[in-house]
Every structure is written in C-alpha cells, then in structure tokens.
Length: 130
Image (cartoon, rainbow, N blue to C red; front, side, top):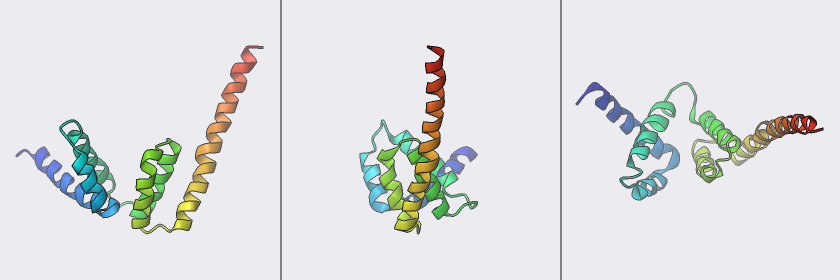
C-alpha cells in the first residue's frame, strides 16, 4: 500500500467516525445503504475530505462549524441538506434559539445583500435601455 493510500485510509476512518458523531449512525447507515457503484466514489470523497479533513481540523469547534454550514447552505440555497445540518447542529450543542438567530442573521447577510446587488445591476441594465 502506498503512502497516499494509507493516508486515504486514515482520513476515511477518521472521516467516518466524525461523520457518524455529527450526523448520527442512522443517517450515515441510510446514506451507505443508498450507495451503489455510481455514488460510491462521491461518498468516499465526502467522507475523506469533508469529514476526514475539514470537520476533523482542530481550529474550530463543531458548534462553530455547524453555524457556518447552516449559513453556507442558506446562502447557496441548498435547502435539501439544511434539515440534516440543523439536526447536526443540535447534536453539536447549538440550541433552538441559537439556530433561530443563525437563520435570522443569514436572512440579513445572505438575502438582503444579494437583493441589493440585484437591484443595482437591474437599475444599470434598465438605464441603458432608456
């Protein structure tokens, strides 16, 4: 086994441990049950990189990582994954009130600035046509 393969095995093992701790065994087992030849490489990729590399880093605690993840999912409109990460945030120690505040804060910084920029661009485009 090459060094890179060994490193991948360590990252995969660590990633699976963190993934299970954050998302829960039931979620991970369900994801693994849906995995097939088509999705196996992607599942391995997110286990090694998202969970084995990033979520495993010591620089931020899991509460902060959850807050950032919720905000990013809102900002990019990835509502299909938001429920999963709200559940993970509760697992990671965020309260309902903290989650509410994260969502309110995201509404201002993910919604209003985007709308403000869109209005500015639309005004410029419409002014060109006059």
